[in-house]
Image 1 (cartoon, helix red, strand yellow):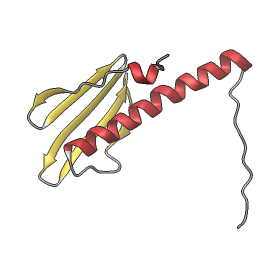
Image 2 (image 1 turned 45 degrees about the horizontal axis):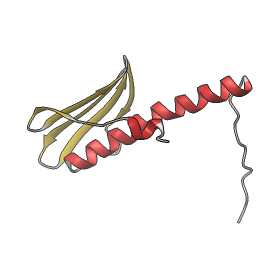
Image 3 (image 1 turned 60 degrees about the vertical axis):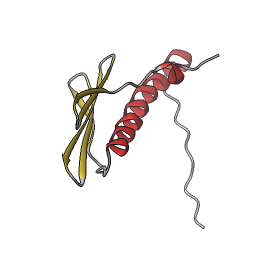
Image 4 (image 1 turned 90 degrees about the vertical axis):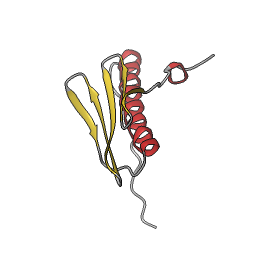
Length: 101
């Protein structure tokens, strides 16, 4: 059985040779080359700006990868929280005490 993560086809649309966008549901991921050394990237959820250009990317693939990571982290962390609320009525937080080494 496939998980929902495996069912999201991430296909970047080329707006120009150095400008790309991926849209999924309320998400919008953008990647654009700013100069020869730097690619800008951002992730939006509706009107909310959830990730932006930190860390900076040196290549197109690195910028796309960073945007995809932040997109998936945001999308699936919310689903996990919703599932916990549905099952338990609250979000379970695992507490791990700090251990001195």
